[in-house]
Image (cartoon, rainbow, N blue to C red; front, side, top):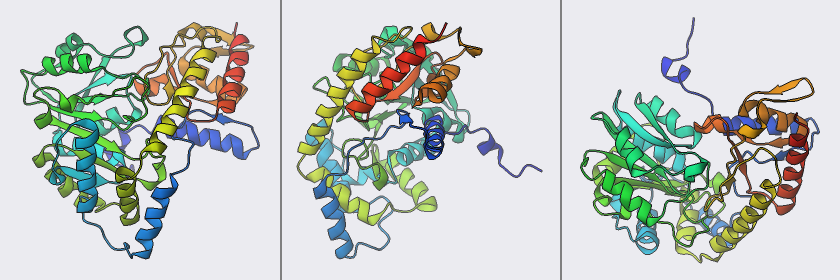
Length: 397
């Protein structure tokens, strides 16, 4: 007897977490694995944020928090979005949850009906398609490869729309590609949606502060978009607060109310202590954000340069986030001894088992033939990982 629901049986496990687990298992066996599979800053949470959390404990913030988050934090988010993004969302339009991942899933569950179509530009983060499936929606993927800098065109977007399209998803800066849409590109995409005011746009902006192009623009700021766009963000990446599990959504009031209703039934409010720490992060000095951004930019330059030495790879120069997403088809159809490397999944497993470098297969991001490397690690780790990858790739015949 199968006791697992069909809903869960249809869900795929997270490939990034699975590869991270395999890496940890090898490490536990004494293997020196360099883990480039995980999307997590290697910095520690800034001291002033930790001090705010300690004060919150001393001030007895140890009770249930309001379902949509403390009003003081929602006000801080509102100020942040006005100050940094030029977007005006009232605190009542903000919902705080257990990480940006929960808020993203909440919005999808609150807006997508069974059979509704959700347009997802790909390559895309591993959980987008799975969240849509969980809501019993239909994912409609729109592919843009390295030759397009992984960015979909207005023509591609327009062609993907049907009468059943309910939601369009955007992610800039992108996980897994690091691509960043320019203001002009977002204006053109917004124009492609102008005659479909019924479509909701979800804009995942969790990597906004990790960018190397000087300006990251939200599609929510384009003409006609504020009233139909839900912005997803959080503090995990910019403030090295992945374990604190605080993210938020900001969007139309009816969607914020629906998300609050949903959240109230299955998690309630997020950690009271983490919320007070997040207030400090958003309202405090931002020097730490820029210091981390500069470090990621230096690492980006390093890994892009080293990637040029690996045969069979084709890369763009990512403008944000902390990922390199090389096209590796030039490494496929080869062998290492008797081991055949037929797919990018084979190649990634070969690199894990032979070079002891953990990466993630591009197939997990709807882009087979590619792979993702996170350079959220030290310069020395990057150099050593790329050396190992090159040596292992050179052995392919």
